[in-house]
Image (cartoon, rainbow, N blue to C red):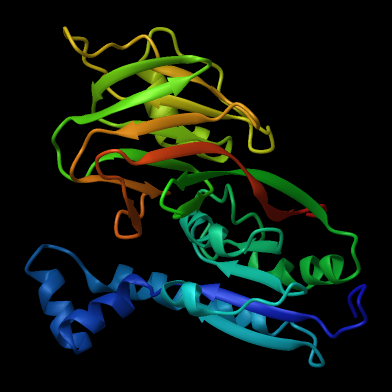
Length: 303
């Protein structure tokens, strides 16, 4: 029982495996095998990873107490799934699954299960399948170690908003230069660049780290639970009408970063999901700041 006296519900989140996507595309295992063979690839590796994923899911589900409620949801259906405030979420897959799902799970306890430690790094999926029972029990009893990871929110003046765990990108939908005005720390500057990245501490091990490696004046990046963000302007271009003095900075609560679009086809998307974007057309204002919501990631306290 949880603290409200209700039987816990475990919601398992997965995504299609490579093998399932191949079958969806080619229809049969034979056709999928032929397709990979023509590209000097073996289907055996893909099938092995598929079976390892299925075994991990089966292992986790076998450890859920019989009197607990259960639900399953595919990553692609998260925007249509109704979560309960008392749910315990178990994401089984790679780290990116947790990142992609995080915006639908604010303040819910999330247990990340790594089905293949040799394939996935395990930054966000920190549990082995065999540890599911211990993790679920600790969460239900209110004794789990919870890491509250900072997220980033973008709000556009037309009322649209976007939540992300790693970072958000603001720029052109195409490979053209992004044009906008940036307001930061009481200053304003018109810029032309390859776009703007605003990263959290979780995202500091990904895109933001790559950007830092290319900068001679690389700033310190936040840790996952730090309540601030770091923004970077990618390849700011100085000209007679554009500058590059506001190309990096810290974004804190009460001191947001604001961008005003000068683009017809500007976009904003989070965590690398380009299909799930907000239009950022001419004159739109985007306010980027630390989100009030956090990812409540359950951390192992046992071996």
